[in-house]
Amino acid sequence: MPLTELAAGERDDLALAVDLANTWETLDPPNERLPGLDTLRRILVHHGRASAAAVATEDDVTGVRALRDALRETFFLGDEATAVAHLNALLEGVPAPRLLRDRDGWRFGWEETDPAFLAGTTSMAMLGAIHGYGFARFGVCVGAPCTGVYVDRSRNHSRRYCCWLCADRVTQAAARARRRKS
Image (cartoon, rainbow, N blue to C red; front, side, top):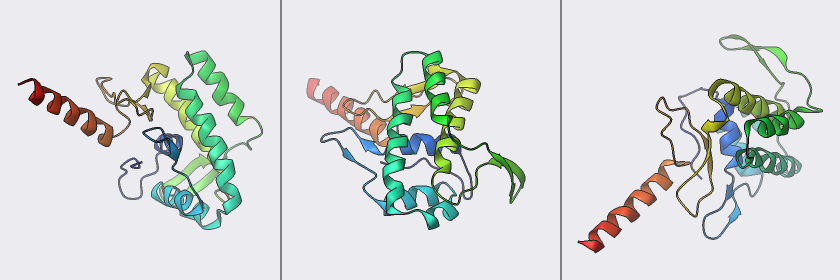
């Protein structure tokens, strides 16, 4: 499970949501890619959430897995209205965001004193993606048997794979098939 490439110090809540959703590996054999606290901390630090990583506990892993499953489910819903209702339901019970001081000024967000902020951050990011790009940009990898998810932010709406590994795997398989036919 490669994590989304980010510029140094960049925060991208949508990339965090997709990376969390992809912590369930569906290739052969299916397995858990969020096995414990170390992996959760690595994901949080990668996404610029070092303070949340520092206070995360083993008990938080179970809650993040449940959030992961709910975020992942969004990509398999049939239509935009259902996806919005699903994400809005995830926000129920989440405290309202606050205006927080950031290194670049002010931003709306949640205190990152524990990983509970992830439900609000990731759900809002996915709702923002539906608002900005439309639900048609939410996709599931076409590199069977993979069912990794992505949000297509390309200009020409051309993304088909969850990551470069799947794109490379499919390209290599097609090249081998062409060579066998020759």
